[in-house]
Image 1 (cartoon, rainbow, N blue to C red):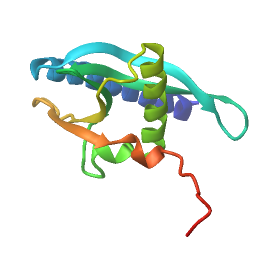
Image 2: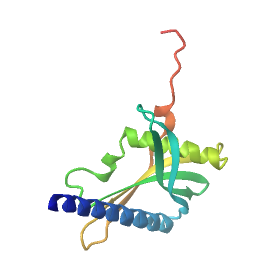
Image 3: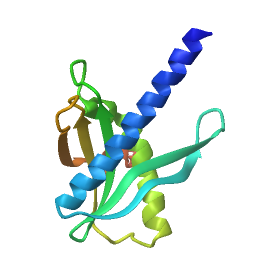
Image 4: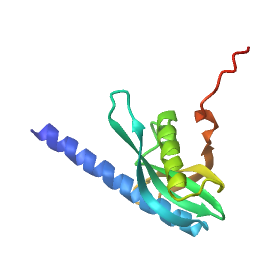
Length: 152
């Protein structure tokens, strides 16, 4: 019974760390000239192999000048084991890319410049968190379907 309680406490703590990170990232971006447009945008992006609906989420959508930025925020209490950025793997990038396509289509932004950024936050106890913005962390080209022409 206490093991279950401890697990729930960890999940609550993890979600609080994530919420704090998103708030800190939004403030950081505003201080650096970004205009925030949306947070926690969720959209259906397809179905998995079992036929279950999959939802993609974009933590922050912001404008950097005229460029639309789809921003993933990763917050960790330590980077001793791995950088927060290491959690933005290909699977996560694919989900965000698909959600961003829905966003652009929904708001008729097909011809606007856009990019995918990551904000990495490491909490340092009582010190100010270490925040790093990685502009253009990935692009859609790796997720484009390849068409075989029948030639080698």
